[in-house]
Length: 237
Image (cartoon, rainbow, N blue to C red):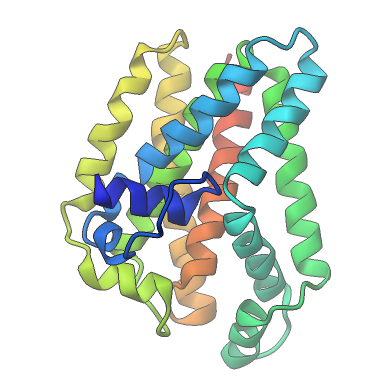
């Protein structure tokens, strides 16, 4: 329970009492999908009762962003600035770690949010889509935490130091209950493929541009994976 509470205090803005030592979660980073169930589940309960698909999709987008404290979205903006930066690796790393948001960050933030909104609005069940997207997005974070070699000290390097090669397997097992939702096999297969493919692509990009991974890349993986999973599930349906 200490690890779960530490995870939720790190990944959400939920009021959960006295702050727990982050080390409790660092030893169990495979628990990331559980945060997806909490965030996605709370949002799904709300949007399930909203008859307007446009309003429900908009509230779903706002819900997943604000329940997570926009923490991962901030990583997406930094990642966008870094990949758009012109120059050598050092310049790109400075753009990645700079607290200022530039045109690249704004562009990738808008694009990802629009894709997420479009996918939700086109989904047969917005509630199911947001739950699946959020859980699978958190799997991508668990995967990158384990396989993403850090290029600098920080939160990611701290979590990575406690990870083990079998962590992604446990995180995958935690995603299996999603098969109980009323979605097609093709949609579940799409989600399963993308929750591995998206972080792997980001890993390759990050190794080439930055020499490794940091917390911003992991956060970006959450946002990008969620958007692409929900969008592609709608297309498959």
